[in-house]
Length: 368
Image (cartoon, helix red, strand yellow):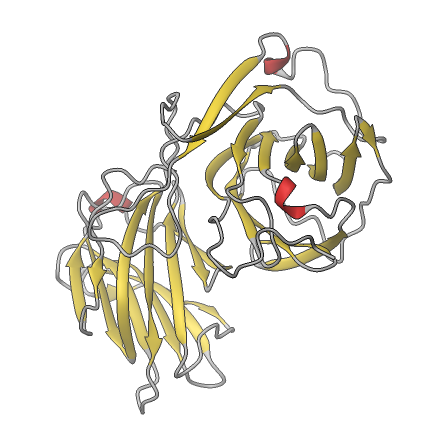
Protein backbone atom coordinates (compact mmCIF):
# COMPACT_ATOMS: atom_id res chain seq x y z
CA UNK A 1 0.00 0.00 0.00
CA UNK A 2 1.17 3.46 -0.73
CA UNK A 3 0.62 5.84 2.13
CA UNK A 4 3.13 8.46 1.03
CA UNK A 5 1.51 11.81 0.46
CA UNK A 6 -1.54 11.00 2.59
CA UNK A 7 -2.82 14.05 4.43
CA UNK A 8 -2.49 14.30 8.22
CA UNK A 9 -5.29 12.95 10.35
CA UNK A 10 -7.89 15.05 12.11
CA UNK A 11 -7.35 14.27 15.81
CA UNK A 12 -10.19 14.47 18.37
CA UNK A 13 -12.33 16.84 16.28
CA UNK A 14 -15.53 18.11 17.87
CA UNK A 15 -18.89 17.17 16.35
CA UNK A 16 -20.45 18.57 14.21
CA UNK A 17 -17.26 18.54 12.14
CA UNK A 18 -16.33 19.42 8.58
CA UNK A 19 -12.81 19.11 7.15
CA UNK A 20 -11.13 19.26 3.76
CA UNK A 21 -10.01 16.21 1.77
CA UNK A 22 -6.77 17.31 0.15
CA UNK A 23 -6.92 16.78 -3.61
CA UNK A 24 -10.47 15.41 -3.45
CA UNK A 25 -11.46 11.76 -3.59
CA UNK A 26 -9.20 9.55 -5.70
CA UNK A 27 -9.45 5.86 -6.47
CA UNK A 28 -7.66 3.92 -3.75
CA UNK A 29 -8.14 6.52 -1.02
CA UNK A 30 -9.30 5.00 2.25
CA UNK A 31 -10.85 7.22 4.90
CA UNK A 32 -11.08 5.73 8.39
CA UNK A 33 -13.34 7.31 11.00
CA UNK A 34 -12.96 6.14 14.61
CA UNK A 35 -15.03 7.22 17.56
CA UNK A 36 -17.80 6.21 19.93
CA UNK A 37 -21.58 6.27 19.67
CA UNK A 38 -23.04 8.38 22.47
CA UNK A 39 -25.75 7.27 24.85
CA UNK A 40 -28.25 10.06 24.18
CA UNK A 41 -31.78 10.85 23.08
CA UNK A 42 -30.52 11.46 19.54
CA UNK A 43 -31.13 8.51 17.26
CA UNK A 44 -28.89 9.22 14.25
CA UNK A 45 -25.47 10.17 13.06
CA UNK A 46 -24.11 10.76 9.58
CA UNK A 47 -20.77 10.76 7.77
CA UNK A 48 -20.95 12.82 4.59
CA UNK A 49 -18.58 12.89 1.63
CA UNK A 50 -19.46 16.22 0.08
CA UNK A 51 -18.49 19.13 -2.16
CA UNK A 52 -17.02 22.04 -0.17
CA UNK A 53 -18.34 22.90 3.27
CA UNK A 54 -21.95 23.09 2.05
CA UNK A 55 -24.42 20.33 2.84
CA UNK A 56 -26.31 20.96 -0.40
CA UNK A 57 -24.10 18.61 -2.45
CA UNK A 58 -23.39 15.35 -0.64
CA UNK A 59 -22.01 12.62 -2.89
CA UNK A 60 -22.44 9.92 -0.24
CA UNK A 61 -24.22 10.13 3.09
CA UNK A 62 -23.75 7.16 5.42
CA UNK A 63 -26.52 7.55 8.00
CA UNK A 64 -27.01 4.96 10.80
CA UNK A 65 -30.39 5.33 12.53
CA UNK A 66 -31.21 3.76 15.90
CA UNK A 67 -34.90 3.59 15.04
CA UNK A 68 -37.30 0.73 14.27
CA UNK A 69 -34.75 -1.85 15.36
CA UNK A 70 -31.85 -0.09 13.66
CA UNK A 71 -30.87 0.40 10.03
CA UNK A 72 -28.47 2.41 7.84
CA UNK A 73 -29.51 4.80 5.07
CA UNK A 74 -27.21 5.62 2.15
CA UNK A 75 -28.11 8.51 -0.12
CA UNK A 76 -26.90 11.35 -2.36
CA UNK A 77 -27.95 15.01 -2.26
CA UNK A 78 -27.47 17.22 -5.32
CA UNK A 79 -28.28 20.94 -5.30
CA UNK A 80 -30.25 20.48 -2.11
CA UNK A 81 -32.38 17.59 -3.40
CA UNK A 82 -32.06 14.08 -1.97
CA UNK A 83 -32.03 11.05 -4.23
CA UNK A 84 -33.58 7.65 -3.59
CA UNK A 85 -32.62 6.12 -0.24
CA UNK A 86 -30.81 2.81 -0.07
CA UNK A 87 -31.56 1.11 3.24
CA UNK A 88 -29.64 -1.72 4.85
CA UNK A 89 -31.73 -3.29 7.60
CA UNK A 90 -28.79 -4.01 9.83
CA UNK A 91 -27.17 -2.03 12.64
CA UNK A 92 -23.44 -2.66 13.12
CA UNK A 93 -23.09 0.10 15.74
CA UNK A 94 -24.05 0.00 19.42
CA UNK A 95 -24.75 2.92 21.71
CA UNK A 96 -21.91 3.52 24.14
CA UNK A 97 -19.46 1.42 22.10
CA UNK A 98 -16.45 2.51 20.04
CA UNK A 99 -16.38 1.92 16.30
CA UNK A 100 -14.07 2.00 13.27
CA UNK A 101 -15.72 2.98 9.99
CA UNK A 102 -13.73 2.71 6.74
CA UNK A 103 -14.62 4.08 3.30
CA UNK A 104 -12.53 2.77 0.39
CA UNK A 105 -12.95 4.71 -2.86
CA UNK A 106 -13.02 2.44 -5.89
CA UNK A 107 -13.58 3.28 -9.55
CA UNK A 108 -17.32 2.58 -9.49
CA UNK A 109 -18.32 2.63 -5.85
CA UNK A 110 -17.48 3.19 -2.21
CA UNK A 111 -16.77 0.05 -0.18
CA UNK A 112 -17.70 0.39 3.47
CA UNK A 113 -16.31 -1.64 6.37
CA UNK A 114 -17.42 -1.41 10.00
CA UNK A 115 -15.17 -2.75 12.76
CA UNK A 116 -13.12 -4.70 10.23
CA UNK A 117 -16.10 -6.33 8.49
CA UNK A 118 -17.43 -5.53 5.03
CA UNK A 119 -20.80 -3.80 5.43
CA UNK A 120 -22.00 -2.40 2.10
CA UNK A 121 -21.03 -0.72 -1.14
CA UNK A 122 -22.51 2.42 -2.69
CA UNK A 123 -22.33 3.19 -6.40
CA UNK A 124 -20.98 6.64 -7.28
CA UNK A 125 -23.76 9.08 -8.16
CA UNK A 126 -21.32 12.01 -8.32
CA UNK A 127 -17.80 11.92 -9.84
CA UNK A 128 -15.49 11.28 -6.87
CA UNK A 129 -13.02 14.02 -7.82
CA UNK A 130 -15.72 16.60 -7.06
CA UNK A 131 -15.76 15.52 -3.41
CA UNK A 132 -13.31 17.57 -1.35
CA UNK A 133 -14.74 17.56 2.19
CA UNK A 134 -15.93 15.18 4.89
CA UNK A 135 -18.42 16.03 7.61
CA UNK A 136 -19.72 14.18 10.66
CA UNK A 137 -22.89 15.07 12.56
CA UNK A 138 -25.13 13.49 15.16
CA UNK A 139 -24.78 11.35 18.24
CA UNK A 140 -21.08 10.42 18.08
CA UNK A 141 -17.75 11.51 19.48
CA UNK A 142 -14.69 11.32 17.23
CA UNK A 143 -11.23 10.03 18.04
CA UNK A 144 -9.70 10.67 14.63
CA UNK A 145 -10.27 10.69 10.89
CA UNK A 146 -7.36 9.15 8.97
CA UNK A 147 -6.47 9.10 5.29
CA UNK A 148 -4.56 6.36 3.50
CA UNK A 149 -3.74 5.98 -0.17
CA UNK A 150 -4.02 2.26 -0.96
CA UNK A 151 -3.77 2.61 -4.72
CA UNK A 152 -1.32 0.18 -6.26
CA UNK A 153 2.00 1.51 -7.47
CA UNK A 154 3.36 -0.19 -10.60
CA UNK A 155 7.03 0.34 -9.80
CA UNK A 156 9.70 -1.83 -8.28
CA UNK A 157 10.25 -0.77 -4.66
CA UNK A 158 13.66 -0.14 -3.13
CA UNK A 159 13.66 -0.34 0.67
CA UNK A 160 15.95 -1.43 3.45
CA UNK A 161 15.14 -3.89 6.20
CA UNK A 162 13.88 -7.46 6.27
CA UNK A 163 13.84 -8.98 2.81
CA UNK A 164 12.85 -12.13 1.07
CA UNK A 165 13.11 -13.00 -2.60
CA UNK A 166 10.78 -15.28 -4.47
CA UNK A 167 10.73 -16.18 -8.14
CA UNK A 168 7.22 -15.76 -9.44
CA UNK A 169 5.92 -19.08 -10.66
CA UNK A 170 2.55 -20.71 -10.58
CA UNK A 171 2.00 -23.45 -8.02
CA UNK A 172 1.12 -26.92 -9.21
CA UNK A 173 -2.64 -27.19 -9.46
CA UNK A 174 -4.55 -29.39 -7.02
CA UNK A 175 -6.23 -32.52 -8.24
CA UNK A 176 -9.33 -31.87 -10.25
CA UNK A 177 -8.22 -28.53 -11.71
CA UNK A 178 -8.27 -28.28 -15.48
CA UNK A 179 -5.13 -27.14 -17.32
CA UNK A 180 -5.08 -23.66 -18.77
CA UNK A 181 -5.12 -23.08 -22.54
CA UNK A 182 -1.63 -22.53 -24.02
CA UNK A 183 -0.41 -18.99 -23.50
CA UNK A 184 -2.89 -18.14 -20.74
CA UNK A 185 -0.28 -17.88 -18.02
CA UNK A 186 1.83 -15.04 -19.33
CA UNK A 187 4.40 -15.39 -16.56
CA UNK A 188 5.26 -18.96 -17.54
CA UNK A 189 7.56 -17.91 -20.39
CA UNK A 190 9.36 -15.07 -18.60
CA UNK A 191 9.79 -15.76 -14.89
CA UNK A 192 9.80 -12.62 -12.78
CA UNK A 193 11.87 -12.25 -9.63
CA UNK A 194 10.67 -9.77 -7.07
CA UNK A 195 12.15 -8.67 -3.77
CA UNK A 196 9.67 -7.17 -1.35
CA UNK A 197 10.78 -5.43 1.82
CA UNK A 198 8.61 -4.19 4.66
CA UNK A 199 9.71 -1.07 6.52
CA UNK A 200 7.59 -0.07 9.49
CA UNK A 201 6.86 3.64 9.19
CA UNK A 202 4.68 6.26 10.81
CA UNK A 203 3.05 9.17 9.01
CA UNK A 204 3.42 12.56 10.72
CA UNK A 205 0.13 13.80 12.09
CA UNK A 206 -1.56 10.42 11.92
CA UNK A 207 -2.51 7.90 14.56
CA UNK A 208 -2.03 4.43 13.12
CA UNK A 209 -3.27 1.35 14.92
CA UNK A 210 -1.01 -0.83 12.74
CA UNK A 211 2.31 -0.25 11.02
CA UNK A 212 1.93 0.68 7.38
CA UNK A 213 3.54 -0.91 4.36
CA UNK A 214 5.44 1.21 1.87
CA UNK A 215 4.69 1.13 -1.87
CA UNK A 216 4.95 -2.32 -3.42
CA UNK A 217 4.63 -3.64 -6.94
CA UNK A 218 1.35 -5.28 -7.84
CA UNK A 219 2.01 -7.25 -11.03
CA UNK A 220 -0.41 -7.34 -13.92
CA UNK A 221 -3.43 -9.64 -13.53
CA UNK A 222 -2.57 -13.39 -13.61
CA UNK A 223 0.96 -12.73 -12.29
CA UNK A 224 1.47 -14.06 -8.77
CA UNK A 225 2.32 -11.44 -6.17
CA UNK A 226 4.29 -12.36 -3.06
CA UNK A 227 4.60 -10.33 0.13
CA UNK A 228 5.77 -11.05 3.67
CA UNK A 229 3.41 -11.53 6.59
CA UNK A 230 5.20 -9.60 9.37
CA UNK A 231 5.75 -11.87 12.36
CA UNK A 232 4.02 -14.81 10.67
CA UNK A 233 0.60 -15.96 11.77
CA UNK A 234 -0.71 -16.07 15.32
CA UNK A 235 -4.10 -16.67 16.90
CA UNK A 236 -6.56 -13.91 16.10
CA UNK A 237 -4.54 -12.46 13.23
CA UNK A 238 -6.41 -11.62 10.01
CA UNK A 239 -5.19 -11.37 6.43
CA UNK A 240 -7.31 -9.13 4.18
CA UNK A 241 -7.23 -9.13 0.38
CA UNK A 242 -9.34 -6.66 -1.63
CA UNK A 243 -9.69 -6.47 -5.39
CA UNK A 244 -11.88 -6.90 -8.44
CA UNK A 245 -12.50 -10.10 -10.39
CA UNK A 246 -11.75 -9.62 -14.09
CA UNK A 247 -14.80 -9.78 -16.42
CA UNK A 248 -13.58 -12.95 -18.15
CA UNK A 249 -12.05 -14.56 -15.10
CA UNK A 250 -11.61 -18.32 -14.87
CA UNK A 251 -9.88 -18.57 -11.52
CA UNK A 252 -7.61 -16.91 -9.01
CA UNK A 253 -5.83 -17.99 -5.83
CA UNK A 254 -4.82 -16.76 -2.40
CA UNK A 255 -2.07 -18.79 -0.74
CA UNK A 256 -0.60 -18.71 2.77
CA UNK A 257 2.89 -20.15 2.49
CA UNK A 258 5.64 -21.44 4.72
CA UNK A 259 8.73 -21.49 2.54
CA UNK A 260 7.92 -23.67 -0.47
CA UNK A 261 4.91 -25.26 1.25
CA UNK A 262 1.41 -23.90 0.59
CA UNK A 263 -0.25 -24.19 3.97
CA UNK A 264 -3.62 -22.83 2.85
CA UNK A 265 -4.63 -22.62 -0.83
CA UNK A 266 -7.91 -20.87 -1.66
CA UNK A 267 -8.82 -21.15 -5.32
CA UNK A 268 -12.16 -19.80 -6.65
CA UNK A 269 -12.91 -21.49 -9.99
CA UNK A 270 -15.65 -19.87 -12.06
CA UNK A 271 -15.96 -22.64 -14.66
CA UNK A 272 -16.58 -25.11 -11.85
CA UNK A 273 -18.55 -22.62 -9.71
CA UNK A 274 -16.50 -23.75 -6.73
CA UNK A 275 -14.01 -22.47 -4.17
CA UNK A 276 -11.30 -25.13 -3.86
CA UNK A 277 -9.19 -25.36 -0.69
CA UNK A 278 -6.12 -27.47 -0.19
CA UNK A 279 -2.63 -27.76 1.31
CA UNK A 280 0.60 -28.64 -0.51
CA UNK A 281 3.47 -30.07 1.55
CA UNK A 282 6.76 -31.13 -0.04
CA UNK A 283 5.26 -30.50 -3.51
CA UNK A 284 2.41 -32.93 -2.84
CA UNK A 285 -1.24 -31.84 -2.69
CA UNK A 286 -3.41 -33.24 0.09
CA UNK A 287 -7.17 -33.93 0.17
CA UNK A 288 -9.16 -31.19 -1.55
CA UNK A 289 -12.17 -29.42 -0.01
CA UNK A 290 -14.88 -27.59 -1.99
CA UNK A 291 -18.14 -27.33 -0.07
CA UNK A 292 -19.43 -23.94 1.06
CA UNK A 293 -22.57 -23.04 2.98
CA UNK A 294 -23.76 -20.43 0.47
CA UNK A 295 -23.63 -19.78 -3.26
CA UNK A 296 -20.41 -18.82 -5.04
CA UNK A 297 -19.38 -15.61 -3.21
CA UNK A 298 -17.37 -14.12 -6.10
CA UNK A 299 -18.75 -12.63 -9.32
CA UNK A 300 -16.99 -11.75 -12.55
CA UNK A 301 -16.41 -8.03 -12.89
CA UNK A 302 -17.27 -7.37 -9.23
CA UNK A 303 -15.21 -6.21 -6.28
CA UNK A 304 -14.51 -8.44 -3.28
CA UNK A 305 -12.97 -8.34 0.17
CA UNK A 306 -11.60 -11.59 1.62
CA UNK A 307 -10.77 -11.86 5.32
CA UNK A 308 -8.83 -14.94 6.54
CA UNK A 309 -8.71 -15.15 10.34
CA UNK A 310 -6.38 -17.57 12.14
CA UNK A 311 -8.09 -19.33 15.07
CA UNK A 312 -7.41 -22.29 17.35
CA UNK A 313 -8.69 -25.00 15.05
CA UNK A 314 -8.03 -23.42 11.68
CA UNK A 315 -8.90 -20.53 9.39
CA UNK A 316 -12.25 -18.78 9.20
CA UNK A 317 -12.85 -17.24 5.79
CA UNK A 318 -15.33 -14.45 5.10
CA UNK A 319 -16.09 -12.81 1.74
CA UNK A 320 -17.67 -9.34 1.72
CA UNK A 321 -18.43 -9.70 5.41
CA UNK A 322 -20.20 -13.08 5.11
CA UNK A 323 -18.67 -16.22 6.63
CA UNK A 324 -18.11 -18.84 3.91
CA UNK A 325 -16.18 -21.78 5.36
CA UNK A 326 -13.63 -23.02 7.90
CA UNK A 327 -10.40 -24.79 7.03
CA UNK A 328 -8.66 -26.86 9.69
CA UNK A 329 -4.95 -26.38 10.37
CA UNK A 330 -2.81 -28.94 8.60
CA UNK A 331 0.49 -27.24 9.49
CA UNK A 332 0.48 -25.91 13.05
CA UNK A 333 3.74 -23.93 13.22
CA UNK A 334 1.98 -20.58 12.80
CA UNK A 335 5.00 -18.21 12.97
CA UNK A 336 6.54 -20.11 10.04
CA UNK A 337 3.56 -19.18 7.85
CA UNK A 338 4.98 -15.83 6.74
CA UNK A 339 4.30 -15.34 3.02
CA UNK A 340 1.10 -14.28 1.25
CA UNK A 341 0.74 -15.09 -2.46
CA UNK A 342 -2.06 -13.76 -4.64
CA UNK A 343 -2.47 -14.46 -8.35
CA UNK A 344 -4.87 -15.20 -11.15
CA UNK A 345 -7.66 -13.33 -12.91
CA UNK A 346 -8.07 -10.37 -10.58
CA UNK A 347 -6.95 -6.78 -10.18
CA UNK A 348 -5.66 -6.15 -6.66
CA UNK A 349 -6.83 -3.10 -4.74
CA UNK A 350 -5.23 -3.53 -1.32
CA UNK A 351 -3.62 -6.04 1.01
CA UNK A 352 -3.40 -6.07 4.79
CA UNK A 353 -1.00 -8.64 6.23
CA UNK A 354 -1.23 -7.29 9.78
CA UNK A 355 1.38 -6.11 12.19
CA UNK A 356 4.19 -7.64 14.21
CA UNK A 357 2.71 -8.45 17.65
CA UNK A 358 3.92 -6.58 20.69
CA UNK A 359 5.13 -7.87 24.05
CA UNK A 360 2.82 -10.44 25.60
CA UNK A 361 1.09 -11.31 22.34
CA UNK A 362 1.11 -14.81 20.93
CA UNK A 363 3.31 -14.47 17.82
CA UNK A 364 5.56 -17.29 18.91
CA UNK A 365 2.81 -19.68 19.85
CA UNK A 366 1.75 -22.69 17.91
CA UNK A 367 -1.96 -23.01 17.28
CA UNK A 368 -2.56 -26.11 19.33
